[in-house]
Amino acid sequence: MRIHTALAGLFCLLLLASCTKNEDVTLIRFDQQLFAGKSPDQIKTLLNQNPAIAQLYFNANGAGNDTALVHELTNRVNNPALNELNAQVQGEFGDMTDLRSQLAQAFTNIKKDFPDFHSPKVVTVMTGFLGPDLVVTDSLIVIGLDYFAGPKAKYRPQGPEYPQYILRRYAKEYIVPAIVFAISDKFNATNRTDQTMLADMVYYGKGYIFTKTMLPDVGGEPIADSLVIGYSDKQLTQTFNAQDIVWGHFIDNQLLYQTNPAIKQRYLNERPFTAEIGPDCPGAIGRWVGWRIVGRYHDEHTGVSIADLMRNADARQIFEQSGYKGQP
Image (tube, rainbow, N blue to C red; front, side, top):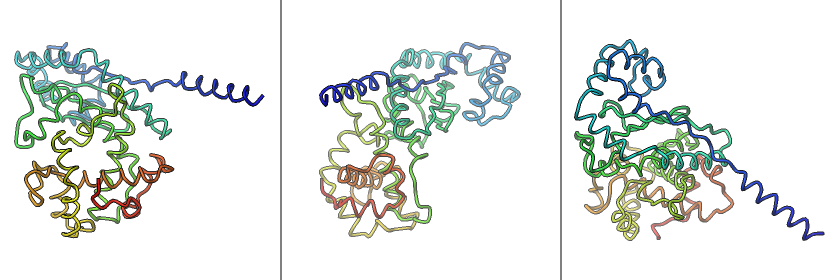
């Protein structure tokens, strides 16, 4: 009788697993709709039909009546060079099957641990860098495909805000990790009175753990850390092997409880490298150390769920209970 009951229970578990349904992803190809229209009236109609997209991406209320925006978009969709870029973008992303599948699995994973999560609509845009690269809100995600067309694209983002170490991350495999990390902020509890560098480090560490947990495997393997934090594989290997030196720098310079914004920025902001430690130390090294702290805490406390981890706003407790002291 016990065997029968156990088998029945196993059957129920298998049945439930087989019936688990991925979250639906509503994908709006605004990029294709935009380039299908060539006249000002067509552009105006498209903007009026999509006011939420126009407001979020172009920061334009009543965008259909914004004559300057309509004029600019009309010029762009009729520009031969941008049409060539658009053709490259369409070739790079195809019918979006991979992107939709990855997002569906990630949204499903998030929903399991955070039942209040509702999958936002996803919109793809191609304007020739008229808007931002990526915008994530609770209800709407807008992806600027032109930014993520890859190194072979006819045009790439230009300007001092796009150095090579940032430009390297503008490839399609970085899109879903960036979206999931942005979503993590909604669930990442913080203590606003704690202005220490440690609090910021733990915030990033929790966000990276959330991202790794929610992202689907690729080819049966967890997604590469490089796609989560943006370091190259070489940088990750070098930093891991030299983390005792990095940790020693943080301790010797009493950085963990530093509250000076200028000092914190040196270790938390994007930079080509962290000059204070050395030319081989990547920028935003404080974020990476935070990942190590939170990762070790999570490994050592197997009974702490990802939801419990994200709800814990006590950065000092996480650090002290992690036992991390620069060890691999």
